[in-house]
Amino acid sequence: MTALYQVAVSCVSRFAAARKEDRFAVALNKDRIAAGKCPEHERLESEFAEARDRFRALSRLRQLTQAEEKVLLDRVAMAIARMKEHAGEHGCQR
Image (cartoon, rainbow, N blue to C red; front, side, top):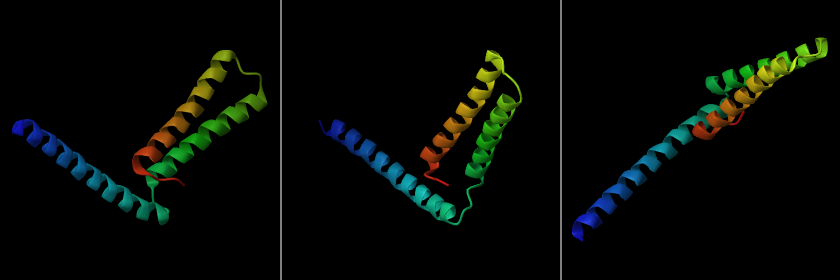
């Protein structure tokens, strides 16, 4: 019984330490974001804007085939997904 208790305590302790490190990393990142210095988020926003603008421009110029439209919309959707994933991991919202 004591061995199970020690295993449980060690697992909880490791989990608590990891959460503390995560909170510290998020706090540092929030300070960095407040200063407007998250280059990865800026890059992802730029990638999204480029994909969105390309889709808009091509769809205004001509009728897109279904395959072209799907590829362009997939690029936009993937850019959004990458931005959301990054924001979730690092807590940055620009």
